[in-house]
Image 1: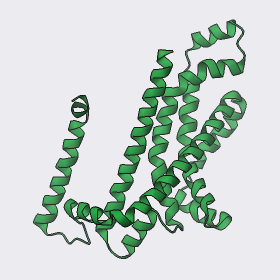
Image 2 (image 1 turned 135 degrees about the horizontal axis):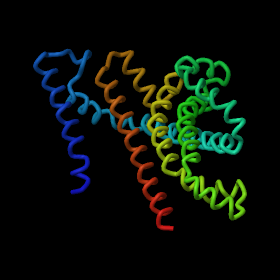
Image 3 (image 1 turned 120 degrees about the vertical axis):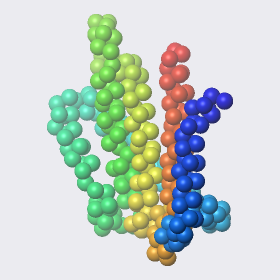
Image 4 (image 1 turned 180 degrees about the horizontal axis):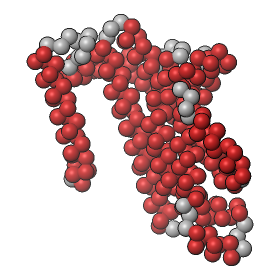
Length: 250
C-alpha cells in the first residue's frame, strides 16, 4: 500500500499520457510510420521478444560492464584528487572540459584508434559514467563534519585513517547519488557505442528499424532503454538503502 501511495501519482500520469497519445493518433488517423499508437508499439514489443531479447541482454551486459569500469575509474580519480589538493586544482578544470566533448564526435576517433572491438565501446560508456562519480565523491569527501575531523586529528589519526574511517563513510550518500546518475547514463552510452559498429544490441536494433521505417520498433527500443535505465537505477537505490542502513546500525 505504501508503494502504491508513493508511486500511484506517477503511474496515473504515465497512463494518462499514453491514453492521450492513443486517442490523438486514432482520432487524427496519424500514419503508423510517422507516429504509431502505444497499443501498436506494445503489440510489436510482444512479437519482437524472441529475437529482441538477445539484443537487450547484449546491451545490458555492455552497460553494466562499462558502468563498473567507469565507476571504479571515477572513484580512483576522486580519491587521488582528494588526497592531493594541489593536483586537484590543476586537473579538475580539465575533467570539466572533457565533458564538453560530444561523445558522438569522439566515437569515430575511438573506432579509428582502437578498432571495432569491445575496448572503444567501454571507453565511451566509461567517459559518460566516470564524471558524476568524481564530482559526487569529491563533494562527499568535503562535506565531512569538520568537528569530527578535528577530533580524530587531535586523537592522532593519520590522513589515510581519516579517509577510511571518517570521510569515506560520510561520503556514501553523495557517492550513491553519483552512481545513480551514472547508471542511467550507462544504458544510453551502451546504445551510442553500438551505433558505431556492433552485431547485436538495442542500438543495432534501433538503427535497422530506422532504416526500414519501422517507427514502432524504434519506439520499442526507446521504451526498452528507458525501462533498463529505471531498473538499474532501482537496483542501485536498493543497494544504497542496504549499505547506508548497515552503516547507521553500526
